[in-house]
Length: 184
Image (cartoon, rainbow, N blue to C red; front, side, top):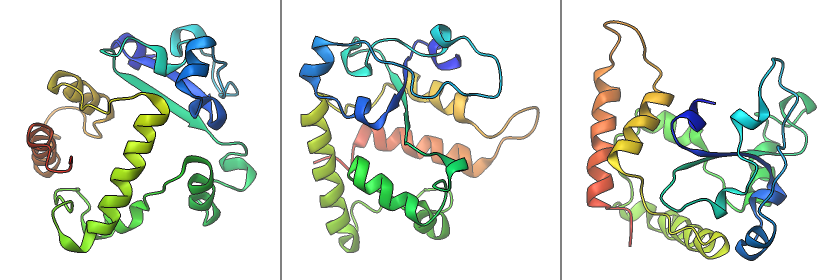
């Protein structure tokens, strides 16, 4: 509900609904909520939008949660087979273990390093395919929206708990947002 209150369009979709074509979504924009078996009481209409995220006003930020069939309690979550499933269903996987071990605060932009040129080309191609499939221009959010997102996802809280490295990362991301070193 916090995303909705912050002005986001929110969806909780199956993989099939998430990968719908733009034409299909415009013809039939209504979507069902994929996950409803939460262990708490909640208001579905206040939490998720009933229309597909791709038909929202383009200036409105969005949050989409994609539900795979057979979640963490059915033997698929966080196991070795999970990246295989994500690759099969979504077309690409980033293994965060590699990033976390080498750059835990994600402060180093690898896009300009020749050793990562092939991966960068693959990721750019995946982004172009995504844009063509969904009609999403993939423009970065505004600084205001980014700061709202950082505030929502921020792991710190309370008095005197700021993390200097985290704050440095936020400022670096804002700089990259303006410089766009990763975009061709």
